Length: 236
Image 1: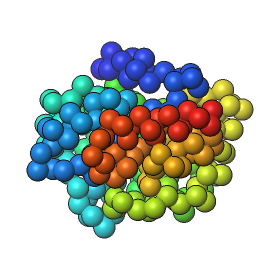
Image 2: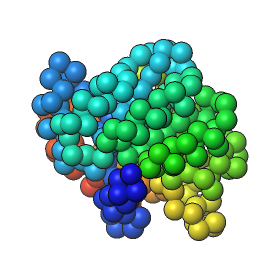
Image 3: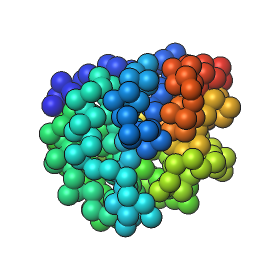
Image 4: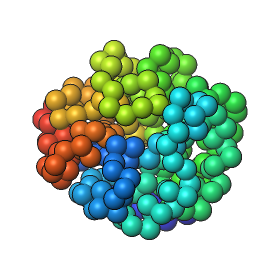
């Protein structure tokens, strides 16, 4: 499991010259031909998987069985966001698979520090996600313990929504905190991310751009990934 952590950190790195890292969101894929869809995005840096329980968010997506199947047909690091009411129930099962990062939602409540510790002890990177209405100040106490902060730029639950630009100051605050306190967590942004807004998102401080429709809904997914990456780099 330690090797799993090292592999992901080596793959992603921490240097500005390597940013942004592109993470296609499986939620937007064609599930009738998932193996082909995964092949289409193999030029990405990691794969983002949203687990939804229909309770924490008003939608149900997929769970560990699908993630396990996906892990067997892709070489991309798997980045799982648990949009569920009780994330601790799934952490153990996911850690046994080829999952490298597990993110829990701040708004799910409960013993967040305990859940983060559980994820890290399992050998995975531990992340915390913030909904658009959740402030930077709310999560400051957890920042010393996480490897990743996922800024939701849409209200979670459904793909295809438009980016909420009001989250940009939150991304900047996270970036400034990281710089001022010499921390090395990744900043990931998910929701309405595309080649048109990639530049301003990266300029605000994001490292990882999660993009669903702007990748999977395009005829040439490789070109879409390249364009998002290129436009992100243009603002560094």
